[in-house]
Length: 212
Image 1 (cartoon, one colour):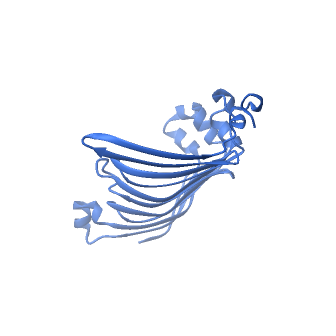
Image 2: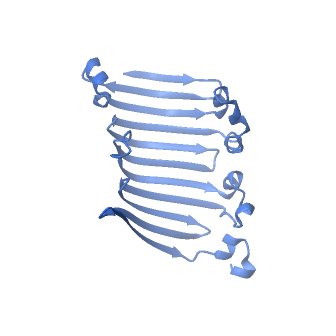
Image 3: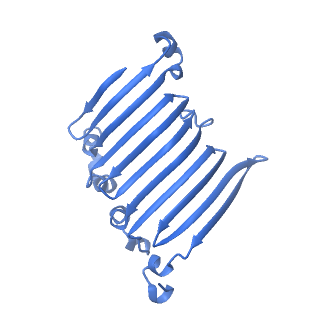
């Protein structure tokens, strides 16, 4: 058991608690998945400048430069074995107006053929100002909403999963239900959407042509 875990570099820092239980050293060396982990990292501060020491070319990457403009903070509370991880809370913020969070369970995350998940809750919120920093709206020919909120839930595996999502933006909402499954060696995809009065004029930035 490790308490008061703290890791710090010039621009980044991680602090929290870590507890690992295993039957014996021999057992965990032979089968790392036999170890049980209880992890609580309540303070994660990431400074991308630390990565420049390993790859100086990153300092010229425009996306990295944009990311560096705001403070990135996160927290992670998880438990379980490597074969079955319970994500109690995963949250991150970039500045004050872009946030992401999720909770759920992931099974066999290290095996792409067997990985499965049950994401009970996923949330993302942001603003037009933050989105413009990464992809200017004038280059896309649309106008971003002043605020947007995306929520979703999903369960399944690579070959068979379902997804429910709700996007709220432009004072409107778009609900989606999707499912993908393997049927006789081919994928079967089912999608249903419900759109409530999306103001096309605001999206296209042209209320004269498309209406308000």
